[in-house]
Length: 243
Image (cartoon, rainbow, N blue to C red; front, side, top):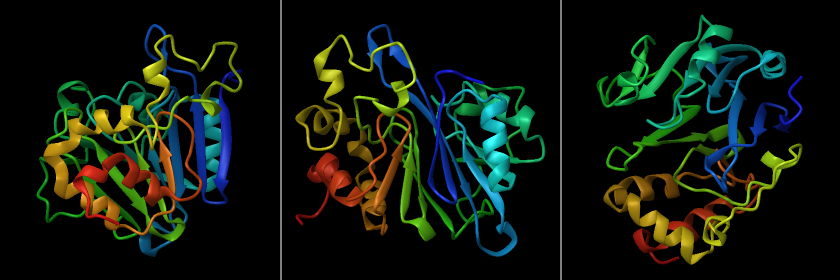
């Protein structure tokens, strides 16, 4: 068992696996993987996983409670460190990434790469899981929308620090040495400034906002259980129509 792993079923079909993670010394942002049980068509009772944190026996056991893993996703060019652990655990799953991550994992066979495969080609989890690719952002992030649960899942586009849940079983502190880092959450000037890095993807910011989501599961920081669209607007207001 992992003493610092926090496993939580957000809904009966969504499990999250939260852990401590330091971006730099003194910058605790946490890490999180998300597993979603799909419900539609050929994907019924299959599992989609955004693989962003360490995979161990406890993670595998809880993912298997949801069903058979069919999709493993590296959501950008930064969140790939543990992908091979998930591939080893679920070798029959399709592996999904974004253009750029394949150069960092040259021994991994990707079944679909956003930016390499034709945009007309479906991955297989649509329309239940919808994706928008922020191709002009430095990490080339994907944002995912799970329509049945009105849940947005993403990595670096929106954070909600401090990472209280991710550090709740750790002796380490979730409070950063640098106060401005702890302010990277919706509604703060700090996050609005950070969001300027996504300004070239204004159309994609609007696409995400057009989704009918309520919950946001970020890789870094606490889950936003309600009013997710309001939180997205607070971060990206500059690039969205006036509400």
